[in-house]
Length: 164
Image (cartoon, one colour):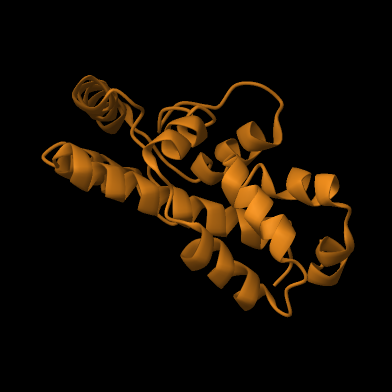
């Protein structure tokens, strides 16, 4: 969708465009209210710097729409389609798959949430290494990392939703 079209949508329709990017009502409402944007750069800057960072509750709500890395998202929602596309290029062989499953389990036990990482542009080995590295983080440090990954995913999805 072109930016000028997005700018002219009724608020509810604009919110529907944004929700698959990151399902955080405050973020969506702020972007819808700030329209019109003169450029995609202005939109993305506002989305990532002025509206984010996300708080703990917003992160938890957004994570509800993300499958474990290495697992296919279920369902026919736009979020599930996007997640499948983002993980489509990953090549999980037997060793990486089993190691990632173990790392995912350890991460979930340690932090009580799914491990989140922007999969697009990363190899399966990089994702595994990041999961293992982040297991050493403290809660606050990891919360900041999760928020940054959500921002990166939101930006990629925003780029796909609104032409830049």
